[in-house]
Image (tube, rainbow, N blue to C red; front, top):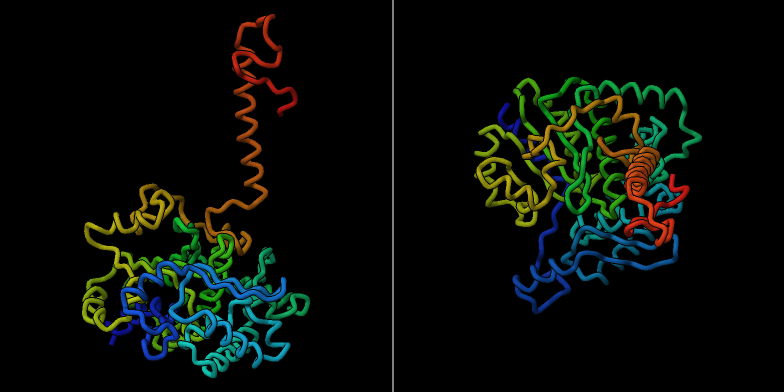
Length: 387
């Protein structure tokens, strides 16, 4: 039973993708063999639906096996089934399309699920979770009117997340080479076993944060690196917590996983994976990488700058330890190690000052020459007032 629970933890990362299976019978791309379809999938990297300026739908970072016209009509049908208040509090404009794809173009199922998700976001207090630290300058949704969120409720939420995040069991840090945000999961750092609701709030906080970080690069999917270093049976979540997590990922965050890396997996995980992988959808299989063996460094180097990843993912540098208080104090659209905009500007300014100082010093070291322009000495420009 415990081994099954352990492996369920790994299976959680499969669910976010809600893979769609290609069906020649249901496809609107007749006359194409599998090789042609695969080639088309590689070429089609985005779907764009144009409306008015405020409602233009642009889905990046993914491809579809469905005809764009089918998806466009599906999205229109879903939006038509939502009332004005539901449309107003959608998490983002691409929400209908993600649910449509997750349900393999079944409109009624997509409508039912998106309505459930909209209601869940409001009931679960997702916007309170997102904004309780008052640093979210890149809000992606309007689930609740921020003015209506009670101060005491937000204060209580902050306290919950501070406890949950203290050990660094989940946090956003860094990006892949394409700009997808990375969420690190460390099951071995579990510190609040038995606090199911608080655990789920912490999960949602980090999912929302990873999504906000990816959005900066025009992506809406994220990467999970799950590090099982130090994991013990006592860290395994209860069956109720596992089911709750599955529900959140599967029903409310479909089509959000770009790729998942399983690091330091116990032997039992690798054994189970070798058994079930033959039955896993090929597109899902491509998203799951077990980080072990001699080839893993080459595999990860294709997707990451290994100087920015943690050592569990073959990082080549000793990155500083995670500091929860610092992480929670940062705006939602920044991952740990990201510099706030003010610090970025300050750093750029200081770099310019250093360059300017060096340039001015080089100029002063040159011997004066009456035959040249006083502001140009041996091709070096001494800019007055460059500081």
